[in-house]
Image (cartoon, rainbow, N blue to C red; front, side, top):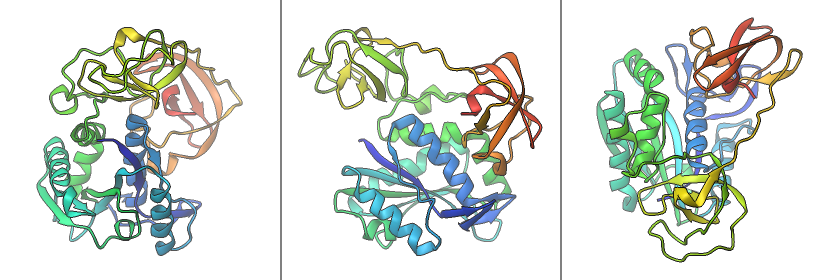
Length: 324
């Protein structure tokens, strides 16, 4: 069940730190910011197209632009990320479905996220009235996920602490096997095979590829080419390499690239999915997506990073994995 597109609700054009439509707000968070962090994670893990609108200056324009972007994508699942708000006490996760035929999948997604976050599963609701559902093509399977209540402190504490695990749990419903930094294998890994590769890895095809993950339709036409792993599923050939075909781990080799190290004076952007400074404190949402100049650099061996950078203005240390 391939996810074709993902987007964050609300937002539109941003002037400084002010969104055209910030969405719901609470506990120091804006829905547009949190939804984009979730969306970036989902896109990174699935290879789906990010159809978030960051250009419109009206709320209706945002919806229309997103629907138009969805219609440019292949038929299949189209995921919309949002957060609820009510009275500060309401809690839980729910999913709206654009078509009744997608109700069962919506229920599984809601249950998976709620279980991972330790929140109430509010279940599913008819979302056929949603602008993105009404204005997208018949083959577009729209699910709108409400990841919790932004004005409920406990909901936000759970979401911010377990966001990546919750994303992995949701993606597992669609057959994606993903790896979070705090991985819960039982919840997040539907594949039972031992894997050496993950979504996003660049690989070289050294043998044959296959038409599907069962091993049917063997072809050597792509031998010698390089590609990126888009999905990892259960099966004899669990790795989908771009749109080229499916591979066993023995059919591919990891392409190792020497990442260019940034240097003092370079301007970098803080990744939207970054969570903590190198020193451990939480990175505020307003820092993410902004550009800063490197003042100092140092060697570290932390998480996935070998370097850390001191950025001007915020005067804080960032791991190299959290800047681009």
